[in-house]
Image (cartoon, rainbow, N blue to C red):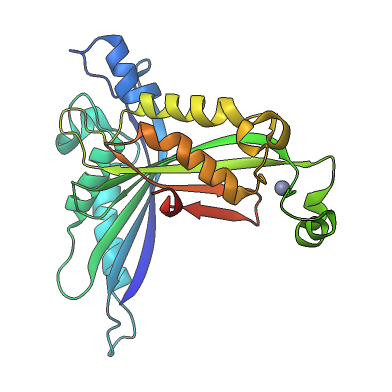
Length: 274
Ligand SMILES: [Zn+2]
């Protein structure tokens, strides 16, 4: 099977706020999306199609036809207000979970051998949703950043071995990174709220357990988990997984991804902690 991804962009305004709820519940469920009279996003939607390559044409699908179908779906959304301008999204909370489901059904999963396989909807640079047509398993990713110093040095190795393995990263006084952590949870969409996870609660957990703990720290000196453990990105991911896991039963913690530099990124699904 061949996969093909086509990107589409649109800008829209919206507000997520249930007028029947107290302010505190709106803030917990919708986070900053419940603030004021609304705000906007430059959405980016990635549509991935999968199928066999047609031996007559040499392509997996007719891109001209896909562009036309995508245009029919995307153009009415662009420069619109989601709460007011679209019947299917009308209501107090046109969340990205509802929006991605709308895109899926509006486009149609396709006929013939080539089908729509998934949509990734980027609401912003720091939040995206993955949808495969299954309402019981929707993926929500949130990205946070923190800056920290570390020195790669294992107490289980000799000084010579540390220098040989870690090179400049073994510098006795350490060095720093602007880390970027993407946390993905998965679960069904709650029909009342239109969300997989309460956005305000998700943000609170990541701020308290990750950003407040690691930002502007020296991992070797300031964190108890790295007193005897070498603070590599691999060990940092394992430590973060263990910290986050108790908070995510429903929805469950699916994946965490740490970007250490523009050249190094690490991904973890918690296999070693289960
Ligand atoms: Zn480093």
